[in-house]
Image (cartoon, one colour):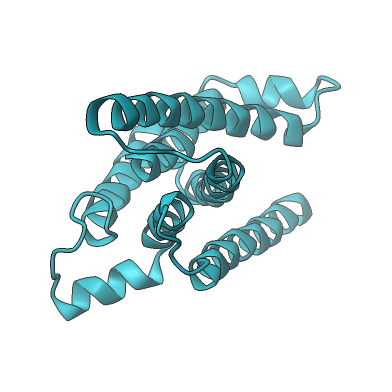
Length: 191
């Protein structure tokens, strides 16, 4: 559920909020202020992180009090790092959707229409169930499964192997998305 919150708060909600601000002219008005564009986006990311951390705290309390799960203090920094990595990746992907789609309703349909199916093939809702090979491949390609595996690995008291591959996939999606955003921004400024 932490992974689901990361995706919804950072991908679905940020894309919708940014598109809404663009449609209402907020982004044009901000361009005339001393506030740098990165600060606007950092505010959205901070909000997504706060929502996700609050959700993680509630889930940790439910797990500890309701199910006797023991969360070691050493797990917390790694959990925060996993949340930040996932939120950063999905914030960049949200910015990509906003860069290529024009209307808030369209963006909402795209983000929900991609996120929810990916959640089902990415070990977010169904863990341990066997999916058909084609769906496993789709889940392996996109970052959602890898964020989920990272979260599970850092919270496993038995000590799962460090999720280097999962972190590499999340990082690759983040850097790839930033590269595409840079190209799009350069073309728009030149055009």
